[in-house]
Image (cartoon, rainbow, N blue to C red):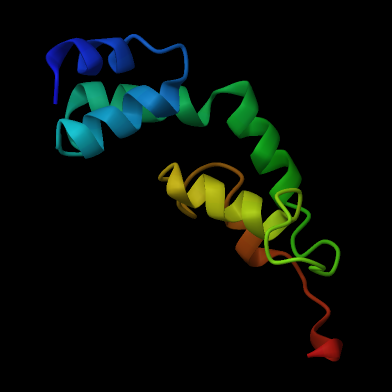
Length: 104
């Protein structure tokens, strides 16, 4: 890939862009200091914190369409694609929240 494009991505205002560029394009290990820093900046970003604030209400409403971007399952998928796991702040609550399984 063109080095100018990589540099442009690494200068992005979006921490997740810098994080995924390092992991996916530069193939840097998650142990690299720059990768860890980008990951920390990503999970502290206001948009990611907003998503986490929404997904703690899982399971939420019933899914009406498989491609409903506003549904919590889509938002959970997004934060998973960002690389957040249950050991990240706020994520564990999604897996620990009480559920009403009587409809299953």
